[in-house]
Image 1 (cartoon, rainbow, N blue to C red):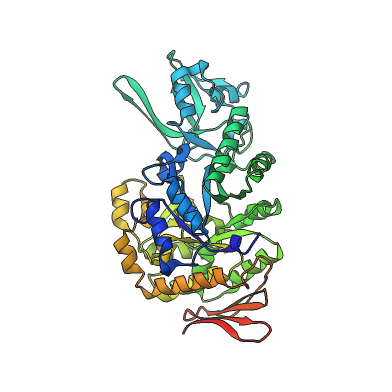
Image 2: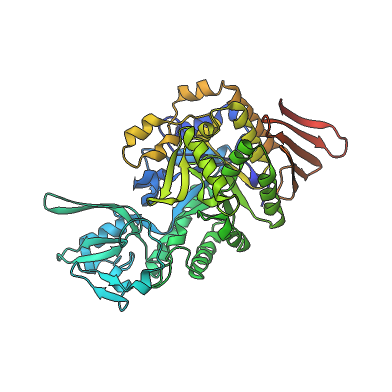
Length: 512
């Protein structure tokens, strides 16, 4: 890993700035953003997709309405590498593979590309009058469901037969002019050689776009076995990951498996122990907790664990999803987590529970700036702490530009549109205006610091100490020492980067 690999990463949709990826490129070319970022995470509406703003992929070719090859070439010229998504578990019903299945039925070369429910559960249950096998209770009592009922989509073959296929996530079925229509995300059959050919071809394509990091979305749902939870099955999940890694290694791609699990379950440790980078989904809540309780104790403890256990992370404040809460269970008490949720809701956030289960808190949808009470001092302190925590910092574009909760976007999105609260697209005039804000200018100054100075190196010695309301984070490498001293009592902080030989201050920043 190089210093470049630890550089800050901007996170956007291809149309987050202006109307397409050329707007993002144009923004990154501005003098104000020079040296602020080494990487760009573009969400998957970059590809052809039809649901979930990109996470229901039709194919991995560029969506010409949002991105062109010249945009990717422009990013490469700026020295920006990419983090891109690969959705392991499912594909859109509009994918060429599923459309071939609909058109040809038993004659389709993609017959086993998706999971025939009845073939999967053969011998494990009873056939129902509706034409699908109802598994015996002992086989499904441990299963993890993302929606009510069995995860089945009844697919009408050309001969009129109704064949059930595995469908973990969204589906919609309707009749139009006597023809059945579908929307949805169909699970892929990882036992099929064709699926692995597809995986190999997709990784090669993403590498050709300039990707260095591949975020594996929904990977934990891909391995399935009768009688298991069918989410994070062991050892199958790790076997699949290792197979994908071997394919990724051929293109020098670094894998970032994405999973939300509580701290107490220790999944992040398992991922790290197997040599993968993991998401730091704990940091967003820990920073807010530190400000609300005026203590850096838990942040220092988490930083020390990352260093001592040699856990490689990508960390963040906000993102395209909500602010994680489920992840904190076991790190903070349930009462403390509920207190955080109450604070964020009081500041305009919306609670996202896991498929309607009120006691299974998952995330709160809000911009991070609004979650901090739209307070510039808190926003700058949060960014400073993030940049001094171990890991590669990922920066959601609305956080950078002090974005507030977008309730109008939620209303336009209708039912289940809560995530749109933190996905506002910005125009060039918005960018021009916000670049004049002190909180934006100072975040960019801190980002340039993070990417410029040698102290922030993969070889750095990193330490963390907390006492009372104070937190101290220190990086030492390349003849430099960078120190952040923060006080959560009043959100003041000081940063100093010194030359280890001369003691000269090479960079200084203070929020009094």
